[in-house]
Length: 150
Image (cartoon, rainbow, N blue to C red; front, side, top):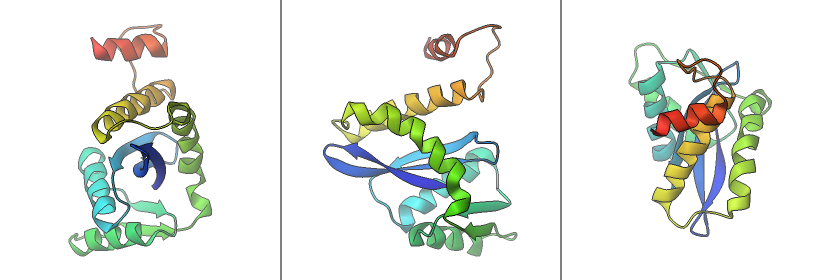
């Protein structure tokens, strides 16, 4: 799990993202602040949609650690926390594809639009990585994306 910065209305906002060992996107969430509350909201969303992980690898961010410790205090079986800057390289490399799409946009006009656009970018990125299999055979990633919109 890691966060990256996205420019919205001339200010930096935080895109929380997580990938599994295979590099598949687990979840993402755009938040206005980088604090314990935002990190906890992200972890609750990711765990609610994908199930409880055995281990979470984070960087040296204090807010992520505080949020995980608060979640572990409420659980019977705590989530193992690994804080290591260099074990987070998979998610750092995965940020590259998102940054490549958002950098030429030079930011978004408002937070709502940024959230919608990032949702589409993340969905397309998941399709390209092969995470979303279509029922139709021999569809290109673009055709798969357009079939979701219809």
